[in-house]
Image 1 (cartoon, rainbow, N blue to C red):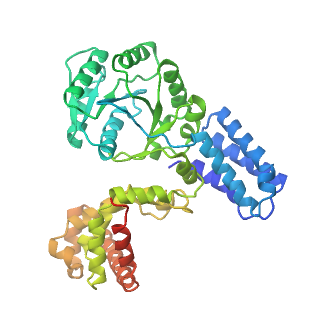
Image 2: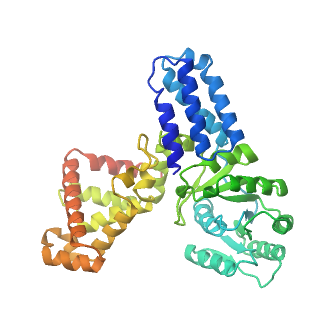
Image 3: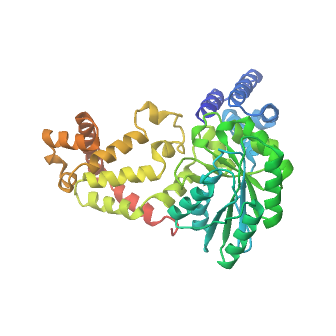
Length: 446
């Protein structure tokens, strides 16, 4: 996520990390590199000026000069100013009453409908009560059908109306949500390719009709400053309460994320980190700034593991290896699925400190490799998964045909499995798996 920005900022601050003394020349050169990194990341010019001026002012003062470790203090200054630009404290999505109405607005293609579906999964974990989805988009073909399919996939309720009046649809949806005693009503609204008077008048009419608890602008991170300018236009016309940043996993620059709060005054409340319906995270400025500077987000990773990992499966594998039994290919497949649930290896390494952007791709091990490995294991018989040693040349050829891959791919998988099984067997003797199982059992009552 935001690989270009992270790499450039990381290079800038690394040159002063660990220095026992920082001179004016050091500060000037590093600040210049920070400015260039922000501009190349498509951060709005006023935001760049504000952030750079704050860093320069603090770095030239007593805070650094009197420190025992001025290099680390300088990095902390950059981190703190990034947090300030990103909004300071986290501001979660909230709403009182039944139903609490969440209204999503934004341009066409920003990901409003998909985000509406992702919100269902997030809100369902946070609170009891039914969630109703409704679309007021009467222009885009099959918009309401798409939302209905998403609702069915998530096990949520959806509302459909034959009306062609978006405000009337919103009122009817709220009445249905009230009748069902729903906790939340999520309204997906129509978008346009650009900001226009018709779009704004329609959004205002819906807002006036249902008085939403939250009016959230869905912003496509990949659209850069155009999206930030659209957010400002919407905020001038509507009482927006926050921003949901989508497609952050596909944007290497990060300019929209660093600009929107400073430009609009609106907090980023959620961030979309992938295509899956569970790839939506609370936006925590402090953690996000740490990730941009390559300092990781271990707390976020722990929360992700607690939320998405099948802990019973982890304990089962740990107990199996502790008893001296070999890790078979069925176990290996289960671990690959766990990795995919965490957003792939990229999603894990992105939150670990000290890992350079693109490390997974450079190592040649990405989500496509994981999917191919799962396909290979799925092409095996149950007996072959339990006893990989029986897989000879003819079996490899049959498995490769079934997976649509080469025999070399099958051989690589078997070699990787043997290596992992050997490592885990050694680790079992040192108690690593007992520690892992204990950590899973003591995960805060989840």
